[in-house]
Amino acid sequence: MVKHHEERLEKLGANKDLLGLPVGLLEQIDRALRDRWQVDFFETPLGLVDHVAHVATEGAASRYHAANERAADNVKRGSSETAVYEAMCDAELLGIVTSSRRAFLIDAISLAVAVVRELGLPGPILDAGCHAGIACDILAEVVENEIHGIDPVERAIDVARERVGSKANFEVAAIPWVTTIRFDLVLAVDSMPRNLADRAHFLRGLSGVLNDGGVAVIVSQHWANADMQTLRRQLSSCQLGFGLADVVGGYSGAPTQFSAEGCLVFVKGGKVPPPQRLVAAMESDWGSFRDYANATSTLQSRKTQAFKRARQ
Ligand SMILES: C[S@@+](CC[C@H](N)C(=O)[O-])C[C@H]1O[C@@H](n2cnc3c(N)ncnc32)[C@H](O)[C@@H]1O
Image 1 (cartoon, rainbow, N blue to C red):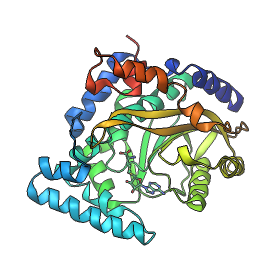
Image 2 (cartoon, helix red, strand yellow):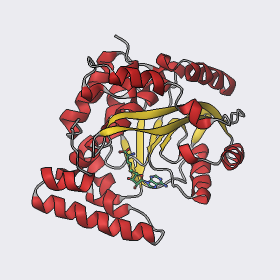
Image 3 (cartoon, rainbow, N blue to C red):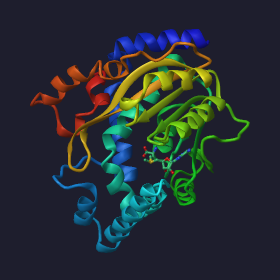
């Protein structure tokens, strides 16, 4: 199983178009984001805090502004950004703020779905750092697997339970998480800590909740600067073998521009080390994405990796 998954992921990594989903399925994911979560494409020259001030009510905008100031203070003191994640639970703010990450979410969810389909993974899926349960809600709609989400922010899990209901199982918890459940796939979108010691802890925690041959799909802006020697050591001690490297993202954000984050896929029990030229492996498809995105016929809202790969 482990070897089979490693070999299959290597093939998918070498020809990333194979990760493309049918266009109808992508449209379904996009529609669910827009209709159920108000996560939509927008264009703005403003930064996120100013954009929120522009489109939200005065009260919501000032709550978001204050939360950002508190979080910035905390980050300076080496503490977490929890204040922002709590503020984002506000019904008015969740859609507006998450819209700035729409391309990352569409691509990350699509990649997870493609991996589940390509490897034929039947077991439970965990979204580690699920916040208000957006990805869980969509995964529950488009795959058959049992869906779980955890997040340390209590208010986010309250919102997830309220809005997603029994389609997924939610718990206030963080990685490393002590549970008897073992997952076939763990998705972690921007929840991995940047600090190296905490990252090791996080990777070990993810590995601990995976079945043998289970897959971790980890999106992080920090992969691009990873020191390869340290990463190789950490992965090997966590029994995570390399599967494939990709980027998620496209034309989005505030201000709206092209941006991407690394996404690495690992296999529990695998032995393959990540490639020395990790960024090149992540960006191997980015050149053809650029051609697609620069074509005048491409809709602005479809300038994401997943839409580029979509099969008609
Ligand atoms: C940037 S948000 C991303 C939320 C969601 N994954 C998305 O992409 O929209 C990061 C989330 O990870 C959560 N988080 C932080 N550390 C975590 C940990 N060790 N385990 C699980 N979740 C964590 C935070 O509470 C926050 O909700």
